[in-house]
Length: 264
Image (tube, rainbow, N blue to C red; front, side):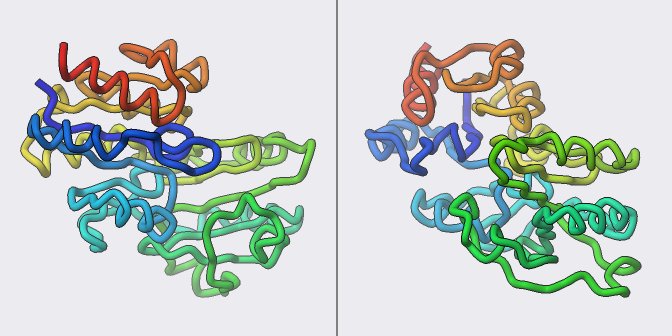
C-alpha cells in the first residue's frame, strides 16, 4: 500500500506551458480519501518552487535543488551544502565564456554575472536572481546548495556545459535538463537520497513511496521508491529503468498511472 507520492515538477506534473493537468484537484481529493500524501522533488530552488507549493497546498516536506534542500512550510529542515571554493576554476571559465552562473544559498538565487539570461531577456529564466558577484572571501567561506549554469544560446546545446563538467572533482556531480542548463551539486545529493530522507522523516519505508519523473535527475528517485514510474514524455534512459511507464505525457500521465497503481 502506497502512503506517499513524490513527484517531479517540470515536464512531469507540469506541461511545457507550466500548467497543471486537468482534473488535478479531483486527483488530490482521491488521494486524501485514501490517506495518501503528495509532495514534490524538483531541481528548482526554494524560491522558484514556492509558488507551486502554495498553489498545491503542500504542507509535507519537499525537496528542492535536486535534493540539496528539504523544506517544509517555508522552512529549511535539512540540507546538503557544498563548498564553493573548489569550483572556482570552472565558474571563472564559465563566466569568461558568457555562461550565466547562479549560486543558491538557503534556497535564494544569486547571479554571479549579468547576462541576457539573468536580465530576463531570455524567457527561459523562470525566476528572479539577486545580482551578487562572487568576492574573494566567498571562495574560502561560502557554502551553497547548488550552482546553476545556463547557456541558452541557440545551436550550442549542452556541449559547452559538458566540457566544463569534465573538470569537476570527485566531490561533485551534475544534472542536465532541457538542452541548455546544468545543476552542479554535492556528490551525496540526488532525489533518491531526498526521497529516503523524507520517507524516514515521515516514518515510512521507501517501499511505501510511489515516485514519478521524466528526466535524468529523476532516475535515483524512481530507483529508491517502492514503485517508480516514468511519464510518457520521459527520456529513454528513465523509461528503461522505470517499474512502469504512464500511457499519457506530463501531468495527465501522473494522474492516470498513480490512480492505476493505488487501485490495483
